[in-house]
Length: 197
Image 1 (tube, helix red, strand yellow):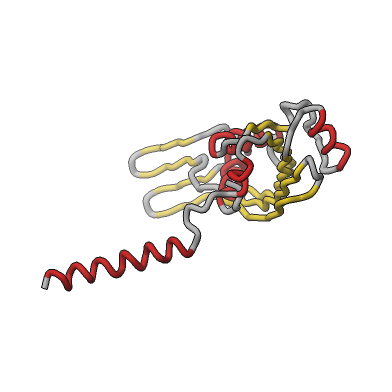
Image 2 (cartoon, rainbow, N blue to C red):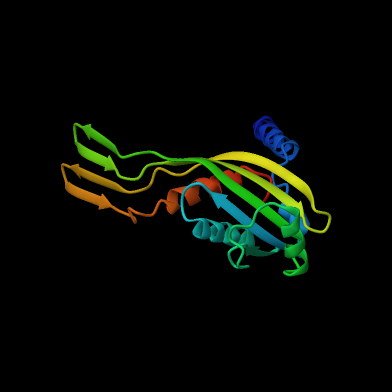
């Protein structure tokens, strides 16, 4: 009798483990293959502060990989384009091995939302962000693109809010002029969907 109960538990567990192994759970990202190399991150965006967003991406990759990572701003080359003469300069002047070019497009931040309900009024001052992220990794020694991809990203909804209800007024305000937070969240969300890390 106890054996039947144990088998009912064991079979689903083995099935879940098998599915996890087949789906590639825990498989390391592409950047893990470049351990010990030097990577330059070049980010361009149509909205938000390019320098702030690039630094955030550099920090994320530095924390989650064993690469030496530097941004194009730190090199004094903030408007670096994806051209072969720049590859040579990155390789020879800065001794870099790879360059990661990231472009954020279709950046949309939802406008002010006002909700009136039976228990009060709430306003979402800065809403959710969605964006498209394209990325390319270039081997600076061969000047060949070794990885290309595209992902969409979305930010959380936990941005600035004002609520007026039965218990009074509740205000959760971040920097109203800072659109970088939802863009950064959406960018990190898109990176999480890639095979980079």
